[in-house]
Structures are given as structure tokens and as C-alpha cells.
Image 1 (cartoon, rainbow, N blue to C red):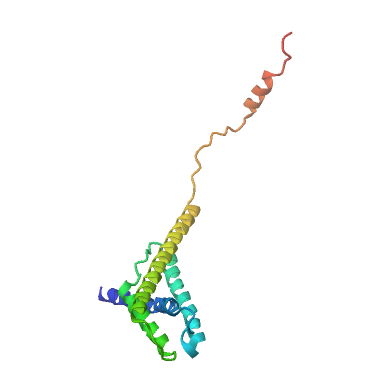
Image 2 (image 1 turned 135 degrees about the vertical axis):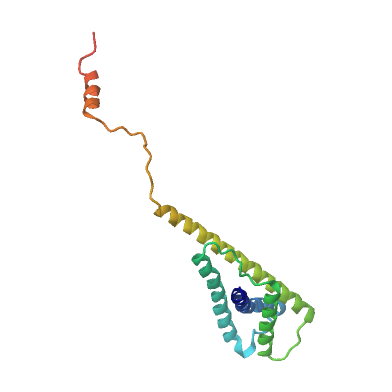
Length: 175
């Protein structure tokens, strides 16, 4: 029991770390727009990490859904964990930049909103993947089941039926 709780907590922390970077990038874009480059000299590194982390998060939604079709986004990180990860990634991004002023209230709002948007998108993706996997499993099960054919009502012609059909029209009609 304890191991199960520990594994679930570890997955939530890992997923929060994966989803925190895309949320932090979204918050940075919301706060600063195009005023300056994300991450300063490490701009390319942060974008490569963003793509890798977003891909890993998508894979972590799809793989469990297809391995276990009953998966229904049970490992969605709580908003607090996602917000903590988003704020941590945002701090790392800002530490790599030149010192500049950060509007505190808009930054807090943007971080919270970005974490919420990424969390909602994650839950939607996990649910959609689970539904698709469930439908595929049902289709594959239905296709692999042996089918018992009920009588459709097609009569097999016999020699007597053939003779009877031709006997009806064997004479010309009366005049």
C-alpha cells in the first residue's frame, strides 16, 4: 500500500516537472510578450527542453491510456504541484536572463493562469487518449470474437423445387 502511494506521488511530481516548463514558457510569453528573449543566452536550450518536455508529457498521457484502457487521467497533477513546478521553471528561466524588472502581480496571475491552462489541456488530452484506447480495445475485441450466424432465411434450391418451378410453365396457356 505504501509503495503504491509512493509510486503515485513520484509520478505526480515527475509529471508536474514535465508540465511545468511549458506552463512557464506560456506565462513568460503572457507577461513579456516579445519584449525580450526567453532565457537570454540559453534561449535555444529552453525551447529544445520545452519541445522535449511537451513530447514526454504527451507520451506519458498516451502510453498508459493504450496500455490500460480504463486509465482516466487519474495521474493528473494537482494545481498546487503544477503551479509550484511552473514557478520553479519560471525562476530558472529568469535567472538565465539579464536582470530586469518583473511586474509581480501580473507575473503571479500569469503563472497561475498558465498552470491552470496546461492542467486543463493535460486532463483533456489524457481523457481523449483513454476514450480512444477504450474504443480501440472494444473494436478489436468485437473483431476477434467468433460470430454465430443465425439463419438468414435463404432457402437452398433443391431438385424438387426446380422441377416444380419449371412444371408450372411447361404448358402453353389455354386459348
